[in-house]
Amino acid sequence: MAKTQDFTKIMQDMMASMPVDASKFQDAFKSQAALGEKMTKVALDAAEKSTEITSKWAKDTIAKVGSLAAKKEEPADYAKAVSDFASASAEMAAENLAAFAEIAKKVQMETVELMLAAGKDISEDATAAVKKATEEVTAAAKKVTTPAK
Image 1 (cartoon, rainbow, N blue to C red):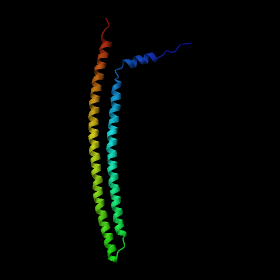
Image 2 (image 1 turned 120 degrees about the vertical axis):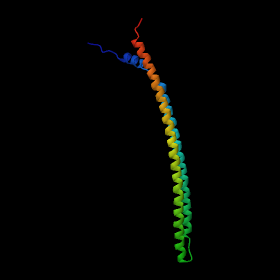
Image 3 (image 1 turned 90 degrees about the vertical axis):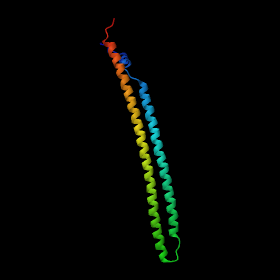
Image 4 (image 1 turned 30 degrees about the vertical axis):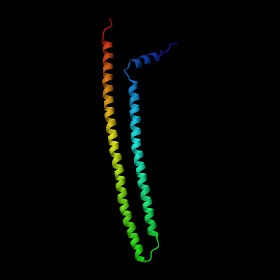
């Protein structure tokens, strides 16, 4: 019977001769992890501030409902209380929505800054990797084409 050839050694030799720098993969992983950590911090800060605004808004609204529900002497006082509550609610809504918009604006700016910095780092890393690979491939090609003496 014919014996099949073992390609393990051939594949190992072929992979060993290829110019692959594993440290670049590690660096890319570390960069991605750092970016993920920074993005998470931005998101958590925004969530914390949003929660604070929501909590304050709810407390203020509950306080206003308490004054709205208080017993009044005249029927006209009830109408005034409802009008005051509606007015105060609209004012609180405007203030709180503006605060939410500020948070969103800050998150957007920080995210853009992080993405631009990451893009710059990736571009620099890619340029360096391509340059190094080109040099290694050129050197390997010279070895192959140079006649052995």
